[in-house]
Image: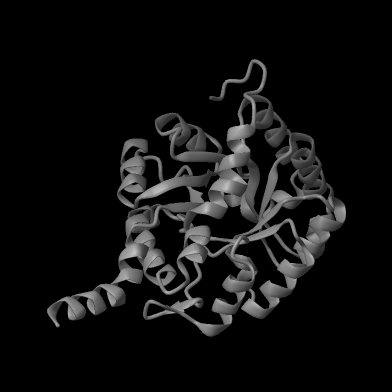
Amino acid sequence: MPKLVLALIAAVLAPAAAGAELPVFDAHVHYSHDAWETVPPKDAVALMRKAGLKRALVSSSNDQGTQMLYEAAPDLVVPELRPYRTRGDIATWVRDEAIVGYLEERLRRYRFVAIGEFHLFGADADLPVPRRMVALAREYGLMLHAHSDADAVERLFAQWPQARILWAHAGFERPERVREMLRKHQNLWADLAFRTDHAAGGKVVPEWRAAFLEFPDRFMVGTDTYVPERWHYLPEHARWSREWLADLPREVAERIAWRNGEAVIGGAFDRQRSPQGGAGG
């Protein structure tokens, strides 16, 4: 009888224990200028390792933060290029022609896997500066990491049908709408950064469970350290992610936790060659 009881207890606890062991690929991390002094690179790396991150997709305003963090931990950091020199560019970049020169200069010097995360909505996607950004992504074979509504995502695909787009925050759309977009676009992935609607009390809500089971290879987790204070939440966010992921089948949980990020983002970066004469590693 004691052995039977122990076996039953082990069976009940197994999913949670398995979830606690999951590595995490964080697909939405920023290390911008306002974080450098309060969270120096060595402290940022320590927080990433404490969170048990396998790797993280990192961007910054400006790109210096990404390069500092990549230099400090090339095993952890996968760099992407944000089209912002300061946080203030968020509201103006789509009409600022100087952004194009900034992107071109950074792309010549360093190695990236994506351009983003950028904020782009509706018809603004068809303005000259965003169109040039898309052209540069195409030229360099980079993903687009879009904080966008569904309309802008559609416009990006219209410009470049073969684009690979990571939809930040899954567009803050309803799970049913996210599923519609994923059905329509095979090269669309979604990060879940800064969302809490997909899980409650450690359980995945039914609408999101249906989305995860239909598209287990198209979702990734993310923290979104958009302000310095959120760096200190990296370990807690990873713990919470493992908690709700443990409510999914193990294979699906592994895909969302790290395998999708590693295959789609990490693998693409690893396959690149360093630019001739580039300053980046």
